[in-house]
Amino acid sequence: MSGSRIPDPPTYTEQDSIPNDSDEEGWEDAEADNEEVSPIICLFCAGTFPSSESVFEHCAAVHEFEYKAVRRELGLDFYGCVKLVNYIRSEIAQSRVPDFTAPAAFLRGEKYLQPVIEDDALLFGLDGEEEENVREEDEGLTEDQKRICELEEKLRKLELAHSEYREAVNRSLEMRLEGEDRDARREGSDDDSHYFESYSGN
Image 1 (cartoon, rainbow, N blue to C red):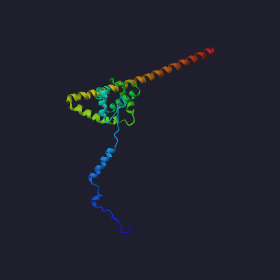
Image 2: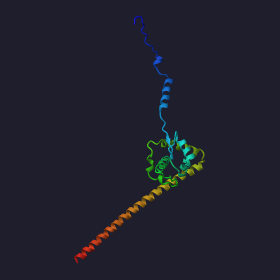
Image 3: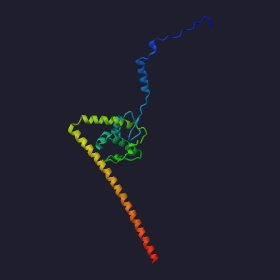
Image 4: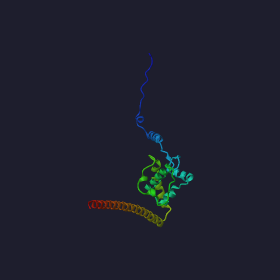
C-alpha cells in the first residue's frame, strides 16, 4: 500500500543475547516441577504415600506394624531391610500373615532380594532410613552400649551362618544316605539274580 512504512527490525543489545542467572533458575525450577515423584505403596494395603517415613508411620498407626522395632529386634542391615519389605509384600500378595519371629527364615538366602513390585520406590528410600536410624541410635548410646550392639550383631550373624551350615550338612548327609541305600538295593538285586542263575544251572 502506497505511503506505508516498513517497520525497522528489532535491535538487540549484548545483554539481551546472554541469559542471566535468574533465567537459568527459572528453567531449573520448571524442570524440577515437571519431575514426577513416584508414590510409595503401603506394605499392607493399596494406599500410596510420598515418602518411606510416611509409609511406616501409616503402617504403625493403621496396621500395627512397627518397622523400626522389627528392624531393631532382628538386627537388620540394609539388605536385611530389603528382604523384610519384599517378604511382607510377597506374603500379603498371597493372603498370608507375615511371620517376624527370630531367627526369621526369610533372611536366609537371596530369594527376597528380588523386588516383588517392579521399581518399588520404598526400596529406594530404605538407604536414607538406615542412615537416619544409625545416626539416631548412635547419638543415644554410650560407648559400652555401642560395643554391646556390635557384639550382638556379630553373634546374630554367627548364629545365622551356623544355621545355614547345619542345613547344608543335613542335606549332604541325606544325599549320602540316599546314595548308600540305592547302592544297597542294587547289590541285593544283583545277589538275587546270581542266586536264581545258580539255581537254574543246578
